[in-house]
Image (cartoon, rainbow, N blue to C red; front, side):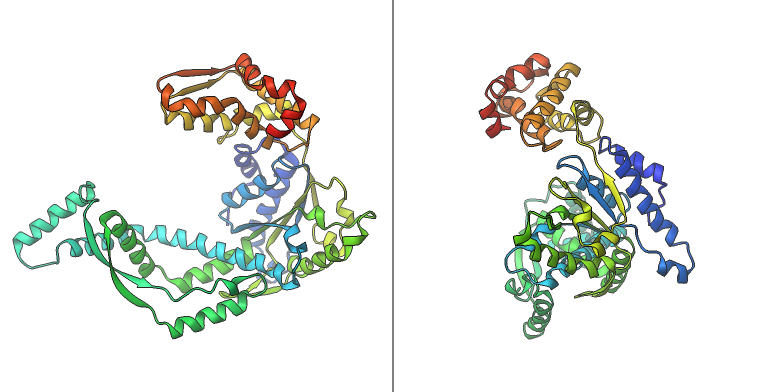
Amino acid sequence: MSELTPREIVTELDKYIVGQEQAKRMVAIAVRNRWRRQRLSPELREEVAPRNIIMMGPTGVGKTEIARRLAKLCHAPFIKVEATKYTEVGYVGRDVESMIRDLMEIGISLVREEETAKVRQRAEAAAEERLLDLLLPPSGHESREGTREKLRTLFRQGHLDDREVEVEVREQAPQIGMLSMPGMEQMGNQMQDALGRFFPERKHKKRMKIGAAWQHLLEDESSRLVDNDKITDIARERVEQMGIVFIDEIDKLASTSSQHSSDISREGVQRDLLPIVEGSTVNTKHGMIRTDHILFIAAGAFHMSKPSDLIPELQGRFPLRAELEALGAEEFYRILTEPDNALTRQYEALLGTENVSVSFTDDGLREIAAFAQEVNTRQENIGARRLHTIMEKILSDISFDAPERAGETVLVDKNYVAEHLRDVREDVELSKYIL
């Protein structure tokens, strides 16, 4: 459980997301409340429910990024689902439970990575000995021991990577893809277990290069050293107490007076979501998962509808509302300069691999930001995602010619930006297709 204070959480989020202070503060408090809840008496702890959040704002303003970065920050299992996928033809109510099953799988992977990292040193030592056994079987003879140590040194220096060895690999039972379709997960798991009994695991020898053999042996030794039952128990606890489900496009489920034809399916999905959000028990192949304390963050643009158009029961389960602001030229400029993963830094690093130095001037970045706002105003507002299309348009020539321009320095200033955007700026119809 993360012990970061709300202020520290906001500071960390500021490294990747510009603005949106209200939403950042809200999610920071939600995470801190989980930490506080763990310090209550068991009786009271069970009664404290998470304060689920609805984020409202146009696309590209940081709704998903806030939730994703928050989960990464506190090492919480995180899944993003599109609410609209549950309104598709062929939908059945139990499909909604698949988000919790998927969250559990993500939790298992997260904990397995952590547990594997703990035993990495021991696994590497054991894998190295097994690899040396394949290269030179052990013997009590002193000269062979000396040869073994020489081989160890050569392997560590990478001189043996092109040699081949014969490694014993396991054959998995056949997988049934058809039965892992939505609504059939439980049947698929049962059939897979049955197949595992009918087709016991077999082993066979396979020749592979030292590098591939090393990875295979390392994974094998790591799986021996970690306790799968312990991983499942930790993951279940983490999913139930710290899991975050991000439900995007929740506004598409809201029913307005002009949407009578599809109201039934929309309201049906809302009613199927309700027990999951309220708190229920979902059956997964790793055991029963309670959703009572999972944090649900819903998001939507709410252009044509509003949160009050959702059914009252679902509204009541999302007591907190955060309105994210549309981004303007100043925010775009900050997005290009402040975050640790700013697009400018990404392009500088990418072209740097070709020995091409790209430098962005302040007036060049402000020109890009102003043009992004102009296009968003003139066309559909897609927020910060517009910067990706504009940056790619500006730097496409350099990216294409980079291998032939090694050693050059390219200065991206206001004139350079204006020159490369002239055609789309003058031709409104062209900009609709290109940007």
